[in-house]
Length: 156
Image (cartoon, rainbow, N blue to C red; front, side, top):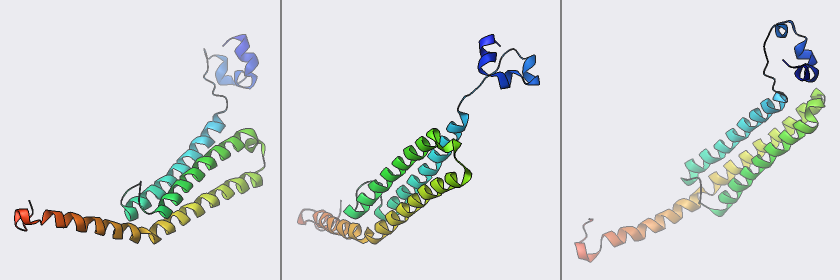
């Protein structure tokens, strides 16, 4: 513990447990990091839901019908901007705001993320039939090639 450290952190240096200690680890802004990690985990969960829905109904994370691709990409952008916006807001003014403002902002962004996830799920479920019909047409041509006269109608 140097005099400079004691001047920077007088509240920690005054603690009884610190009087005989040789040093201390101080993390400034740890509450910002905690909030950032929690928001990141929630946004990652929303993104995983979108990817799992796309995998189930479109049979892949990429591709599929255009409305599903657009909604999937839009939802991921909303999650990204929501993360950046929430963490920036909290870092600048959120930690000094009252509980009502904190809840209002967090619940507002949460409602936006839930609604975009719901819309993406509904659009993906609605347009999944288009993708299946396209696959059936592609498969039909492939099956005809296998049963060509060269191999007497037998598959290789």
